[in-house]
Image (cartoon, rainbow over the protein chains, first blue to last red):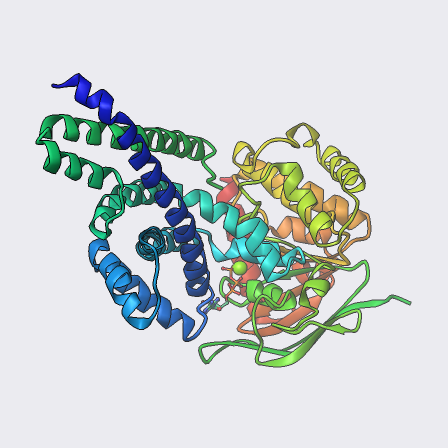
Amino acid sequence: MNWDFIAEYLPMYERAAILTVKLGVIGIVFAILVGLICAMIQYHKIPVARQIVAVYIELSRNTPLLVQLFFIYYGLPKLGANLSPEVCGIIGLAFLGGSYMAESFRSGLETIAPIQRESALSLGMTNRQAMQYIILPQAVSMSVPAFVANVIFLLKETSVFSAISLMDLMFTAKDLIGLYYKTIESLFLLVVFYLIILLPVSILGSLLERRMRHAGFGS
Amino acid sequence: MAETLLTVENLTKKFEGNTILDGLNLTIQRGEVVVIVGPSGCGKSTFLRCINALEPIQEGTISLQGTPIVYGSKNLAEVRQKIGMVFQSYELFPHLTVLDNIMLAPMKVQKRNKDEVKEEALQLLDRIGLKDKADSFPRQLSGGQKQRVAIVRALCMHPEILLFDEVTAALDPEMVREVLDVMLDLAKQGRTMIIVTHEMQFAKAVADRVIFFDQGHIVEEAAPDEFFEHPKTERAKQFLNVFSFEKVEHNK
Ligand SMILES: Nc1ncnc2c1ncn2[C@@H]1O[C@H](COP(=O)(O)OP(=O)(O)OP(=O)(O)O)[C@@H](O)[C@H]1O
Ligand SMILES: [Mg+2]
């Protein structure tokens, strides 16, 4: 292993990691928003919107992110929308993640018995108040495990961003291998940086899960 | 010169074509304690749920102090504040402490002052001997304690009328008493209550009026002594017989 090479290209990996994290985080935030909206539409069985959400979820879950990114990156400009690769990456991640988040929130909502809502209504709460104070807080904590798994999954999926010429970790590694044939060093750095990004998320996630389980609602 | 609190006229409720409640009429005066008894599945829970507009009804009207209670209507949240409901399964909010369970609705729904609500909540908890549980979570309480908290939670909204749906049915036998005692105390305070129960001794002790439901109708309606000692209808006699057998079994 050539440590000089590693030292020399460390900053390049750092920049790439920062880009990966930045796009990942923004994409996931939007995925959460999309997921919440979809879950609410399904929970309230809003006509039409509900069917649209169902189609979106199937489409999003059953096509690879790479394909989705190609559509956004090469397809949207044909329709007159010229987007930077960064924006395309974020949209792609939100499109993919939205459906996964929606499913985790929906299953969280379904674990809350309807009588909890009735109990809130009988205290004079409006539907909105019952949702805000009683149903959502419980549903969200029920969906923590699935949520954490989704976050990790989406961060890992960012590795296909290089396909739309985003200079992320994967791109950097491929670039260096192509230029200098330092395969071992490049891959070593790639793995280390993905671990640096994902391990804390993973550890934080299991801590959170343990806390939630400890708070173990049960009646 | 009693004041009529609740009026139910010609209430008809169907589930998928099955008529569960068939043209019920009932008025309840302020301060009255009405106990509803009847065989399983005769519609007692459904009746209480209709009063709180948790179920749509097919015919008839329900009104509280002249205000109609209509499923899905705009003023529903407002009327419901005046109707306290206690469920068999407690339905405390598991993610909130006992105190927050009690304080949430008075603060968020009635926009009352936090300190004032807290003082009242603690006072009520003290009264049922659970002040030291104020910061506990529901899962840390026994069934009887949970149910007493649920009663306090309803009380803290200052309701005009309280509905109890078999609130001791899910409890271990040794906890039934502590909950019934709270309800007896409320009756003594002159609260208006509708109580659905299978505890016949308790019904006898607490009721001003007993109503016997069967197959969607009010079959018999009488003062407790009269109903339990001299039921007029054959169906009521049969129903009460089941319970006297249960008692014999128990005593063995
Ligand atoms: N959501 C529902 N959909 C269809 N049928 C229902 C529904 N809820 C209740 N029923 C039916 O309505 C009838 C009355 O039910 P209800 O729960 O009011 O009886 P109950 O008198 O409270 O009985 P119990 O003493 O067992 O609590 C039953 O036959 C029940 O099967
Ligand atoms: Mg019932």
